[in-house]
Length: 201
Image: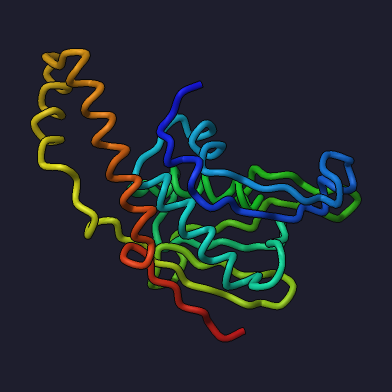
C-alpha cells in the first residue's frame, strides 16, 4: 500500500473506550487512531478530512490534558446543518474518533455505553464545532479555517484539464501530489488554521 509519507508523521489520537474493554476488543480499552486510518475510512485525504482530524485532536487535548480521551463520553455540536457544506464529511470523521453520533449510533448495553444522541447540528454556537465532556461539562470551541494555506496555482489549470477529460496520466499524478502537498502544509501550520477556546463548565 502506497500513500504520502507525511501521513506517518502526523500525531495519533489516543483514546480509552470502556465498551471495547468490556467486550474484549482492546486491553484496558486503550487504542489510537492515525490519520492514515481516517483517510482509509473516508476514502480520501483533503483539507476537510484533515481539518476534522485536527480539530478533534486539538479539542481532546484541552478536554483531557493529562489522560486519554474517553470515547463515548463526548458530545459534539456543529453550527452547520447536517446537509450544509462539508458538515457530513467532518461529522463522519469526528464520529469515528469520539464515538458520538446523532441517532444512528450504538444504543447501549444494559443501559450503558450508548453512543447515539451525542452529536447535534444547527447548534447555537459561533465555531466550527463544540466538544463537551459528559462527566464534567467541560467544553471547548474549535474553529477551523484552511484558507491561509493556499493551493499551488498550478492546481487550477490541472483541475480544468481533469474536468474536461483532457488530463494525461502525468497531469493526474501531479494534481494529486499538489493536492496532498497542501494537506501536508495544513498539518504543518495547525496554529494558523485552528483557533481553540476553552469554555467555562
